[in-house]
Picture 1 (cartoon, one colour):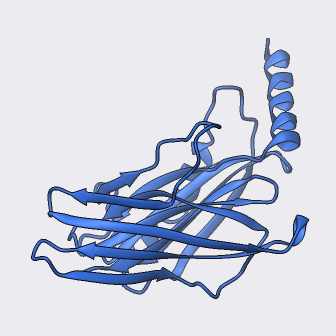
Picture 2 (spheres, rainbow, N blue to C red):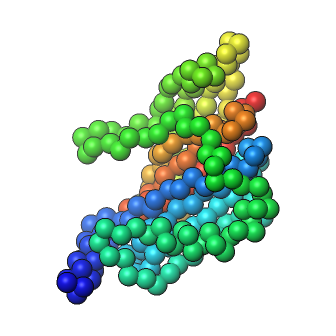
Length: 229
């Protein structure tokens, strides 16, 4: 039975490598108490190397940049049986990142409040990054439009993206924001999508979780942040 499970694992890995990439799992690891810092991770299985991996990031929410020492990566030789998760890679990396978490006061319990979560589209549905919704708790209305551009062909693509954000506040005031770096080109990335949007614990910042797809159809995550109050 053990040998059958191993063979099934290898077949599944081969299929993923030939017909589509792997999709990482995003993990919200929490904010600092004052909402100034946000910690997140992703983990998955790399079909090309046969290793489980995890990436961990701590972001300065006000500056929209990674903190010093706030980026970590780990890859681990392990056998992932069918039906098993790669979260062991995340737990291993977290054990090596305790000092950074404490330094920036990250609490696993301070998740922020979800304003938007993308529901996976079917093959017939077109993914939209043009969003409009109201937060009934704060009585604020959001209009969001992610703009992206891909240049080049085959394996030489380079892409850029940014987000236009319009907020109508409770008092009727409207503000416009541009989020991201529209002039920064990322090699090998062919598509961006808004995966979810979080409101910080102090309700003064937004965190956009963006999924990015590369030429091999691997999906990874990044974030953009903006101070709104």
